[in-house]
Amino acid sequence: MSKSRKKWLLPLTLLLSVSMLLSACGGDKKEAASEGGTAENPVELIWYTIGAPPKDLDKVEAEINKYTAEKIGVTVDIKMIDFGDYTQKMQVMAASGEPMDILFTSSWAFDYVQNARKGAFMELDELLETHGQGIKEVLDPAFLEGSKVDGHNYAIPANKELPAQDVWRFNKNLVDKYDLDISNVKSLESLEPLLKTIKENEPNIVPFAVASDYTQTLPFDYVIEKLPMAVRLDDKEELKVINFLEAPETMEAFKTMHKYYKAGYISPEAATTTSTQDLMTSGNWFLDRANTQPFADNMWSASYGYPVVSVPASDPIIYNWSVMGSMQAISANSDHPEEAMKFLNLLNTDATLRNMVDSGIEGVHYKKVSENVIENLPASKDYDMPTFSLGNIMLTYLNPEDPENKWDEFKKFNESGEPAPLLGFNFDPKNVTTELAAVNNVKEEFWAPLMTGTVDPEEFIPKAVEKLNAAGLEKIMVEAQSQIDAWKASK
Image (cartoon, rainbow, N blue to C red; front, side):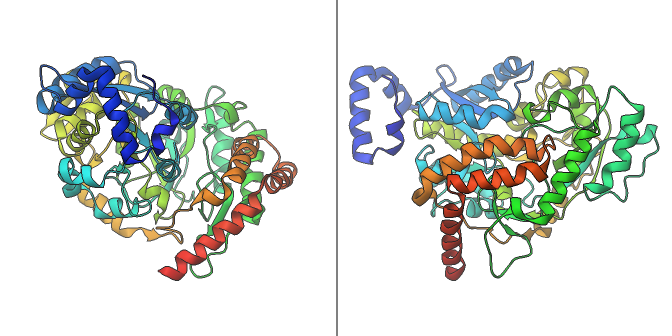
């Protein structure tokens, strides 16, 4: 029997009726699901997560499944979708009822809040109590509290850095080769002499690695990620919603990016390139921008196999999107929600499983230097996973360069973050769904070209604002302001 989009929204009584009907059609499957799996006859979970699938995924998955079958009677079929394609493909598959049990969601990819409200994810409050106690013990309470939607948890956040802080990352081989001083770099404009040096001397290097999902570091707290309405970071009282495209600092940043694009510092295909992973693997880049965490340079250097250094591009700030920056949900269509929660609980509490998923197979992809320190082997290039997206990072092994107190430093970093103005506010789109759909369509036309510097902002920003307003942006902003005012009054 095929699943339908409507199954997201069925009331409990109808779900029970459907369950009884499915039992009549295929009782064996439902009976097995209700009984749970065993080591000999495990339940297979379908797990969709973000990132380009590495070459050795199948090999590592086989080892993961030997371990989880023995531990909890569960195996996983890991399906990975690259960063630039993830949201669109997941929207289509979730809406069509594609079989899935666990899925990556966040504030920036396959939007957590909106999809929770649509009914795409299972409410997890009870499952956390029955099969997720380990998660509750290890996870910073701020993550579970800060990621509630209308009072309920619909996904498990990764235990990671709580604030967001941008950095400029550099390929240290090139920094050293040209004896470049990066100590005074912070603003976008301050990068120009460094980029110029690389462009003039390294014809095979991309000076500024940028892909279509690039977003400028600007002083705004966005009402909805990757939509142009925001509150200024220094606006703690009024919380006035503005179209950030009309802010003067936005125009200046986009003009600088366009200047860099015309100078050849940015790839001509940046606006249509979904990932810079190939550049990272090959080392044919000089600079990019990334979100950091304590000792991130060590992690990146170990992952890429050559030294990476970084300098701050912003202050550490706790946004909704950083609290919800990496989460695993259980699909509302899952036939195995209890097993899915058991797997997520193990992933977040069991160091052996967490490191296998993250780093691969001991003796193949890495070797242990001590109990919790590893060195990558040459085959590690065939199994490179996005660590932040896979659960509790505080279980992951240290690199040789990492200090023993790395996770204590993470806790200090989490405590250092300043709350963003809209932290705890989640926009409810139900009154403007038509306008949001239209605005999203218009945004797709302008967002990547403007962010990557591909187009002249003095020409394109006025066009974008006109089209966005025609699609209903101003109405959405009025609705957002009304909701923010009510939220502010209730605090």
